[in-house]
Image (cartoon, rainbow, N blue to C red; front, side):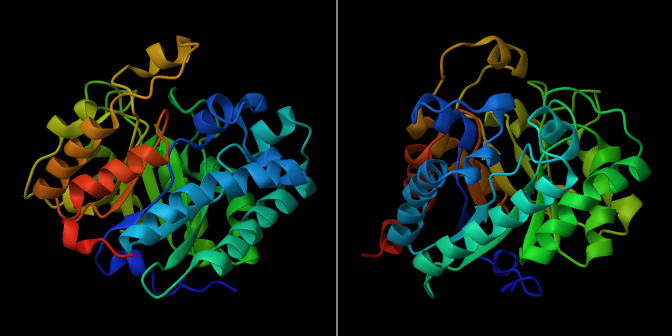
Length: 318
């Protein structure tokens, strides 16, 4: 059963952590092969589940050490119909694997949650296409396309769903409408290019206000992911209402552009301490940004550095 669906604790204040770059960590540090960058296939084997458990627990230890809440994102960024078909998953297998992902996280929550570390189960949705390219769906098509995955998350007991690495306002609108139909809270995370704009040129303000206008503000909150803070910090404007809708940051470790990362054969882990300092500056300017984690190239060391930069030392617990 969903524990927090009707009262998300990350909406009530305080910092919540997330994991980092799941796929890049599993590939470059665990030495795993993830076809089409799909981590959900690991749920099909005991060895794969062991790698996922080890991955999540590294972050959960950081959250427990700092006495912070945690948003457990499912490994399902690629578990949608188009990518699933490339991996041999039909609609029935996709539903089953998406539900299995939520139940896997529920087991982790049972082992790690405490009053100081509430764990929110989040069904992670990825874009229909490539996360670095513009999508072509209209909102109605996107709603129909993503509804199956969202329904599986809702049935399995997820607390919330979040669509990550979106480049299209229409796709974001469709996701929000599909989640609203399933009566499950939803968040949207856009990615931007090095100029702080979506791949088609829309500003973050246009994207966030566009989704809110089209959905009557049905989105719980927004995030930014898969971009370095230097790519978007100048696009934010203190005091403007639309920025207050951004509650989370999951930045890349690298300052490289999406095109450069696509062509790179080595992992760019950047500088965890510098990333932490940049999060601290963002938090000072925008204290509503309380969901903190990482994306490509980051691991638990980066999230720990963010904690050390953003939290006073007296917030540490045993």
